[in-house]
Length: 500
Image 1 (cartoon, one colour):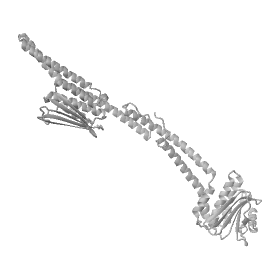
Image 2: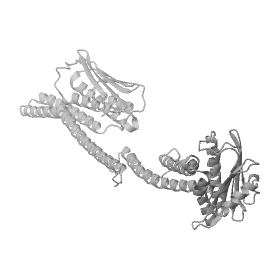
Image 3: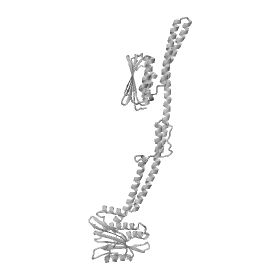
Image 4: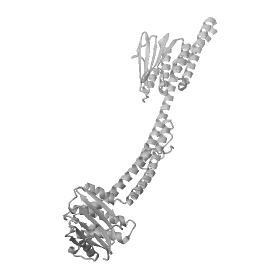
């Protein structure tokens, strides 16, 4: 069996690449949906029309509580992801130029801060670490009072959201609580301008792109790499099995092309490839049976031809020879020695002719190897021997000789044999011209003699003429016979592409 090659252009390589690309694309779509979903929900969720303090307390503070309680290695990135999403929401709800968000613990130590200054459609965002200095907008007495109220667990709205009369900044805060109610810290937001109901930001595409990059985690890369590896491994396993099964079919087809029709495809699966293998095995079996039948028919046909040739030539000579010998014996009894000697001489001549006919039949059974010598040389040798036996001149002309399928050469050689045999029996010709022409798409044979001719339409249905027609027609060719008082012409043409 042929070994599977790692070629991108081959079926095996293309299937593996397809599995890899599909897996990577699916993983990227899943990761993009998981990243964009929270951003979209936070920005466009109708719940964001609730008062700002309620949004902070009900939506964002519980998420931050999970990150603070669990204190996982990626907790810091989770906090920044949530407050950056809140930054987008605040930009959609306000018409100011500056927004700042911070997370503090119970001692008012800054755990995370994010701020953005907007100028038209452009914005500048700064993200600081846990050791960052507090944003200046959070250092005013008003902001400090709001944050302190949140850390104290204050529930009143007027205590958790207030505006500074000097700076014009509004500060809102919400307590970050454990599930049991213990305060872990506070989430605070400060902004200038007016707070409006939710509306999509005018530069939504830019914000979504920025937030997507900000929210994209390193875990996403690990997920894509792991999914790609699993998908590629799956592609290797599935593709290898598929190409192995196709390789079995290819191996069997290669053997069939060499005539080894006993080879079968071993595939017991019940899918489409298994059904294809069974159909091909059945087809090979039918072809094997057909070839065996054709071989048997060819043997029968050859026997019939030999029987006809023996009947028309050797048998007639032997019968006449027996009559002459019998007559000679009676003449010898009557002491007519000269007449008996004449009959014996005729009998000897007939015996010699019978011997020549038998030699011709033997040569027809074992012609020179067409595959070794080629049709032109074999026809020249046969015509030379036939001319020497029959005393009829034969001129062989060859034009455009080239490589020809063996089946075509064999069929035309048999036509030459049959045509010359008919010339010897019936035409009384003195000369024969034999032309072999290799044309563009077919090979042509022309055999013409200068004999007495015959009426083609009235000719009895002999075995010889029908045999020639059948041989040529079996290869998709044509054969025509024309005859007149000045001679007979046999024309045969067979295409190079054999058609049965």
